[in-house]
Amino acid sequence: EHGRSGPSRRSKELSKVKFKIGDVLKVAWTDASINHNALQLSELAENGPLPMVSVGFLTSSDTNRIIISMEQDTEQEKYKENLIIPRAYITSVVRLKETKK
Image (tube, rainbow, N blue to C red; front, side, top):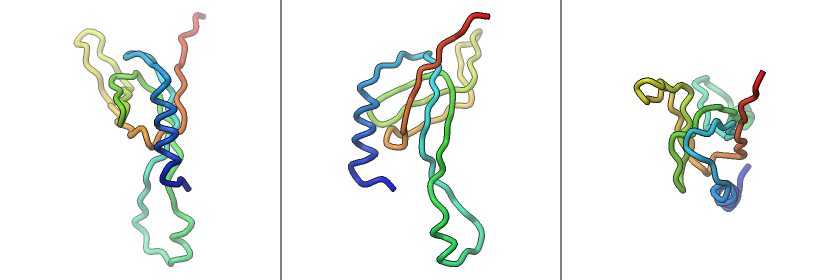
């Protein structure tokens, strides 16, 4: 569980790392979850946020969020499958590098 200062401190640390628009990033983050089943109180305690990993082109970044896009239409300069992640939810970001065969 994150304390009130945990996510915001981590968010500030991540904002110091400079990524460029177009960089391909691997983003680890914590997502909210929902359970539609009827559960007893003891079962509810077993549910929680989900750890996620997403990869995409960095298309936007500000102090509150980043946007990564999974697809890029290079002819029309459009992006699809856009994921908006609040910075407070991010646990790590890694820039992926292209490798030559």
